[in-house]
Structures are given as C-alpha cells and as structure tokens.
Image: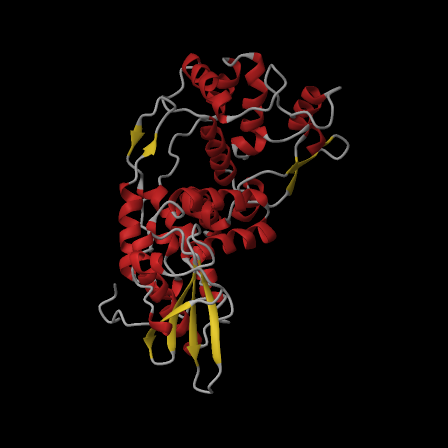
Length: 402
C-alpha cells in the first residue's frame, strides 16, 4: 500500500484495504468507505458474494458539495492491489478536478483510452486503412504492455523509458517458420510515432496538462530510415517482365508503369479503371485517401486488355485463380523471375516502385506531382529522392551562364 496512506478504519468501522477485509464485508447496496484524507474517501461496493465488487471515490469540495465518482471494477488489477490502485486513481481524479484539466465526470483516462480515441479520430478523418494500421500497432505494442493502464496525468518519463526499452527488446517474426529477428530502429520509430500521436492528441483535447512525460522518451532515432537503394533501370525492368510467367507479367508491368505500392495496385478492381477517360482510381493505399491518376495510352491499353469482359468487382490484375494478388502470393514468383532475369539479389515488388519514383524525379518531374502520384508526402519524397535533383539543378544553373 502507498506509504503515505494509513490503513485507517472506515465508515461503520469496516476496512477495505485488504482482500481478507473485503471478504468479511456483508453484501449491501451502499459502499463501504475508507478515509484517505480530510473530505476524501475511497469506497468499495459489494453487491453479491460472487462478484468482484466495484470501487468509487467520495470528495467534499470547498463549497461543501459532496461528489461521488465511479472508478469501476478494476478487474485488470490483481485483487491484492485493487485498493492501492483505487487510491491512485482517486488521487489522479482529484488532481484533475483541482487543475481543471478535464471534466471530472468522465472516466479515468488511460494511455490505452488515448490510443482508442485517436484510432476513432483517424477513422473519421482519414478512413479505415490508416485507422486499422494504427489499431493493429496499438493492439500489439500498447495493449499488451503494462503502460496501457497508466492514467495519463500519472504518466512519467520513467513509464515511457521503460516502454521504449521493452519495445526495442521485443523480437519480431521474420518468416512463417517462426524464425525471429531483432526489431530495427526504423520499426521502433514507427511504433513510437503512433503512440506519440495518440498522446499529443490527448494533450490537444486537454485530457492531460503537459507532454513532459513523453517529450524526450518518445523522440525518434535519427538517421535510421533506410533508403531503398536497389534500383532497376528500364532494360532490367523489361527483362524482369520478359522472364516472368504470363500470369505475373501484367502485375510487373503495372508496377513498372506507375509509382504505386504493390498492395495498392493489387487492390484495384476493374471498376477502378475508367476506360473512357483513362483514369485510375486508387482507393486502398497507405495514404488513406482516394486519389485519381490519368494514365498514358500504353498503360491504358494494358488495363483495357486485362479487364476485357470481366465483372466490375473483379481484381484488375488477377492471379490465375481469379483472386487478387497478395504479398504471400507474389513473393515467390517474383523472386524466381528476378533470378531468371539475372537481377540483383534482393529484388522485390517494392524495388519496382522505388525504381519508377527514381526515374520520375531524375527525369525532372516536380516533387509535388511525384508525391501525389505515389500517394506519399513531399517531405518523404524529398528525404529519400531529393538527392537525385542535383544533376537537374546543375543543368539549370549551367543554362544561366552568360
């Protein structure tokens, strides 16, 4: 129990600070109260002999008004720790009440509650794809971690330092055989960024008074994002397609013609391609928002050929069984086609996206348009491909010479 809190006798001479003491209590509707400080009590309600019971607080304000607030059943906490935890939550509630940070009629706001609220906000503003990705990260790295139940006003740098260490130490599965590998700092950065975004949103919503707890511990590692350095020139991409089986070649041609993520290209349906206007609607992507691309005649002809006489809901680029491509489905045949074409080891579907973006930037297309076509931010394009603009800049400066 907290050393500053004495195990004092409560209302009607009953104690609630131990499992044994609570077991002796008679069932009744009214809570059993134990005094924490003047005008401030924690209560335990025992409605039956088989349930865990529920906790609440009672506080007498300066104006004499008495407020009761439910703390819940605290079932996530071990039975022997529930009184201490109830006291912690009650004190946190009182601190929030006195600081005016939030409406104290609302439930205690934990780290996990902040994450859930942020997922809902992202789902409303950016759509299901972005929200589902965040939800999966929180489920894997936050909900399963002790930090998930920490009330925001009680959050300290120590909590976040410990969380960061656990995050770094958590291995990830490298393949279906169950082999694991250490997490890269790049991956850790992405997961910390997801938590940082949720906490910053909670700060903006005034669910906590300061970002002091996470400002330093959740800072990203610098200079750890790896550039996708493997580049295939146009001849290599042509060889890649020629050495691929016919059922895969169309998918590779699509990746070689547009700067799309492989998953976004695989998710396209026949209905997403407007034959009359030669416009492709990208509806499923990491960016979370629909966008449209007007494709050149050569690419339009490819899509017209492969979608002829097929229903609107069918995948635009289908596998032999008519199903959409997935990462597990394309990984092996792409590896085999790359080996057959004599391409560098490590060539993947994503290599084609990187190569196409590289050509667009190197050929002089402005970064804003490249970003819009690729479904990413100008900052990300500039970060990973901005160095390719140097030759274009030199040529432009050379034309200025008198």
